[in-house]
Image (tube, rainbow, N blue to C red; front, side, top):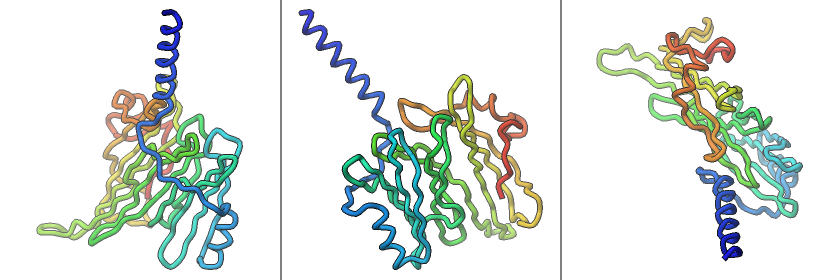
Length: 248
């Protein structure tokens, strides 16, 4: 009876550990590759307008991951590679990258110096936009832990309008340390109508929102209670200690 009870306790303990290490979000598709990233880089150099190789530690193991950013006539894309000790894997691939700093390496949480900030553009009749996604590595897989529309520009032409351009910006401030909640990020949303690029940054503050890093979910979750600790309720702007340069 005691042995059976011990086995039951062990099973529940292992199940709890598995749950705590299983993110709620799905990882990016991955595939084993025959050639290492350096050889892939040499192939791209022959057929691309511009190629960059980034070596950085994106997870907890000592091996450096590789990111190849390639630009040719069809646009700009990036591939992320991880080495498991025996083989190389392609763990992420992104296309339609925004030409303005499309791949950025910085920490989204205070415990990680390098996460992937990926910017992808979209466009259509009367609009163009930039979507920002943040990716983290865990156990050889790449997970999207946050996503927002960083820039959204659209034509307001229509009956009774002047055909102005409406400009939305979401400035993501991270990492931010919160003594109570751990790591958070702040999203400051601004609006403007047909701004003058040569004039000082004068957008109208629309919202200031806080997202808390959740280890169990392995992603950032909206935290309404944290808004008051990091945002000015009246001006809808981040508090002075968190303010960065205004978004253009």
